Image (tube, rainbow, N blue to C red):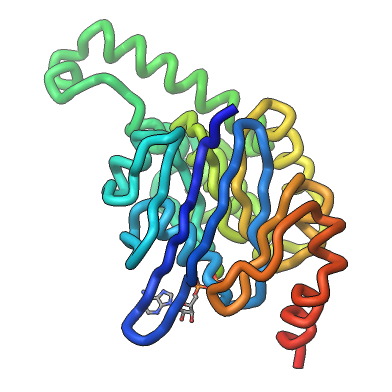
Length: 254
Ligand SMILES: Nc1ncnc2c1ncn2[C@@H]1O[C@H](COP(=O)(O)OP(=O)(O)O)[C@@H](O)[C@H]1O
Ligand SMILES: [Mg+2]
């Protein structure tokens, strides 16, 4: 089957700094793929290139074979990539439910005229949006919180709400940037179960993690970045036994 995402020879420079150096990566439908590496390795920069926040200095990004390298962020969202951020970005003053409904705007068909005239289509879409939000909130175990303000949620729940909101766009690829960052052990375990549930549902997920342990039992393949370079790739077992990977992580602890 063709790749949902293909990154070909991507280099990203910031002035004299080479944040990404000739990166190649792909993900096929239904796969969960991990990107790991020490802090500053270039993981978030790679997400920013894939989602159109940066346009790479060199190289190409493809979505199902179509060149999206020059697309803007909203065009990429519309084309089918949804992401979460390393630093949570929610509408703090909106309810949990409304945050998820707000996430659906990229795929809704109503226009301004519909909204003003309260057309049938708008009412129907409103009802469908409620139902879809309900199932996403249940899936991410946030149903009890649906009326709370997003800003009032405990941290781990906010992270899950970000995922629910990204899922609301029905993405072809879900990109998660350190979804377990800042979570305690229990929250991390719960999140892992949810990601596995998403995998069972057939979602395609690209997952950044700093902590190797989190991705080990979830991902079928892992890419390892260090100082902007791809230093290893393969199954979790292969990369965890890779000498360059071990050294990159050991170097970090010094
Ligand atoms: N907009 C930017 N301008 C300049 N340097 C940047 C920018 N974004 C990231 N960098 C640099 O690129 C490198 C990789 O950063 P990042 O992708 O955030 O790493 P990671 O997510 O792996 O921790 C770092 O040295 C960082 O300081
Ligand atoms: Mg990062």
